[in-house]
Image 1 (cartoon, one colour):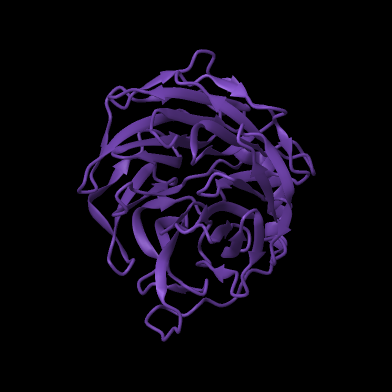
Image 2 (cartoon, helix red, strand yellow; image 1 turned 90 degrees about the vertical axis):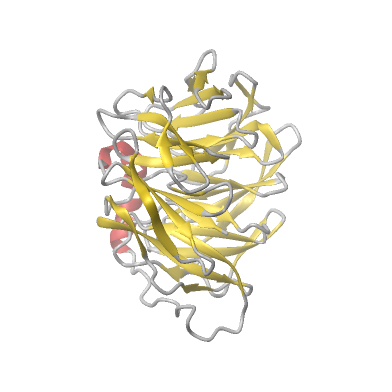
Length: 387
């Protein structure tokens, strides 16, 4: 990884990383006796140097995690072994059969089949070129996939098709080149797959596209759009309204973070909603997650070790409800993902190399007694999937 790409964020969190005591012990594997039923799984992209791996856990009804035997599973490509600031480095296919992982150190994407017990294995031919340099984010809608590549000389958004057998193939004519130094940090579809958005963290711009029936992109009039704060970062479309987009602004400085709200037209044009951007009074709000009912938004503040909580009004305006601190000092919260039932929020703690878990009650969060769960010591984790 080229550390300069996310220098403002890393300057805030790396001193804490060096001071962090870490977490010493791992949870037992699922071969051990556990009184609580397995209700799903949690996966994290370890971004390990050399062969990249995916950490895999059974998710129990009581909120505990236990490592799946064989975890972490090899992704075949290479990670960088260093922290990367991006959202969406690990995604689940629309049919729930596969995981797609970025291998940022080898400029590749891995496709892994999810077994009945949650174990992972690379599909045949499942390691493919990302179509650029240093892939950092993946967007999936049905059989259409886009990847954001952030490396110098080959920074872009590139499209692929994913078939039922897990085979990822480049989509001819889909690549949209980006200037060197843009620092794309997230690429994502809206719920209907008709819009695709990417953020350029380093140059504070937002790309917005209409997605054609053939999967290719048409830039919105006026795209890229100026972000409403420095360092647009984590992004999410509202699950209940595919024309509302929310983007965190991470690089405003100490206690000067915010989240922007946009209305997205059919052609991809972005318009500001209400009094956007909406301050969270924390430092480095980066990753964004929205409850399945579309009523609440959570953003992790990487340099404050907190999660800000907003209520979302019908028109998309945000009301700050407060911020919840993580138990672990200097945790460095990164990517976050809600469980399918919406009752638990799982957070990748990049600095302490762990996963934190919070019970969700409306717009309130409470860290579970069993949280956090350690990740492999060799990991530089980013990207999370919860099934």
